[in-house]
Length: 232
Image (cartoon, rainbow, N blue to C red; front, side):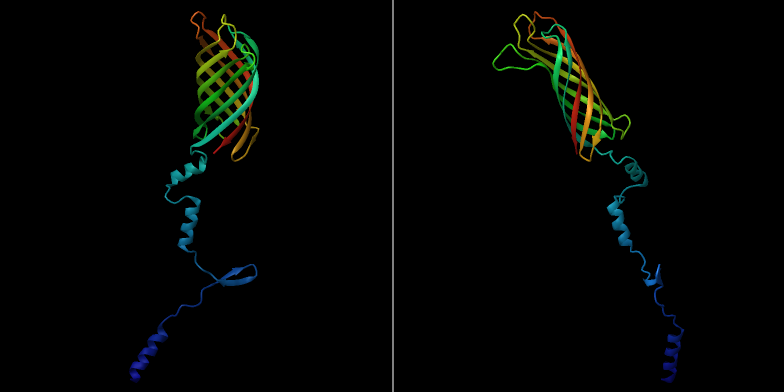
C-alpha cells in the first residue's frame, strides 16, 4: 500500500496545474482576468453589419454603392411659363403649370416613371362656356442623376398630349397628339425622405384637331416649377 500511495503522490507532483488567467491591465493597473473574445460575439457583429453571406466583391460593391437598391419617388410641382401654339386661339400667353410624377430608381443614378400634368393658358369657367384653354400631358419619363449623389437631375419624357379650348367652332377646340419634354432640376434642400427642387422645363409637340377641316398645329412651352419630392 505504501508503494501505491508513493506512486500516486509522485504522479500528482509531476502534473503541471494551470495557473490563474493573466490579468488585464488598464490605465490604473490590473482590472481583472483577460477573457478571450467569443466567436459567437464576432458572428453577431458580422450579422449586424450585413457582411454574413456576402463574398468580398459583393460587400465591396454594396459599400461603394449604398443606394444601388431600387427606390421610388413621388413629385408635386407647381409653377408657370409661356406657351406658344400655332393656330390655336390665345396662341401666345402665360400659363399655369401643374406637374405630378412618380417612379423607381433602377440604380443610384437612373430612374424610370411617369408624368401627368399640363399647361393652363386660360382658366375654365362654369358660367362662361367660351372660357378655358389647356394642354394636358401623360408622358413616360427617364430620370438621370449624371453626377451620382450631386443634387443635379435631368429628365427626358415623351408620350400623349391633349388640347382643349372652349372657343367658337371656327377654331380648333380639341385634339391630341405626341409630345415631348425635358427638365433640369437642382435639389436645394434634401433630407432622408424629402427634397425641394427648383426645375426648368421645356415642352413641345404636335396636336391633330378633332375637326377634320383644321390642320395639325405645333406648340412649345417653357417654364419653371418648384417641386417637392417624397422618396422611399
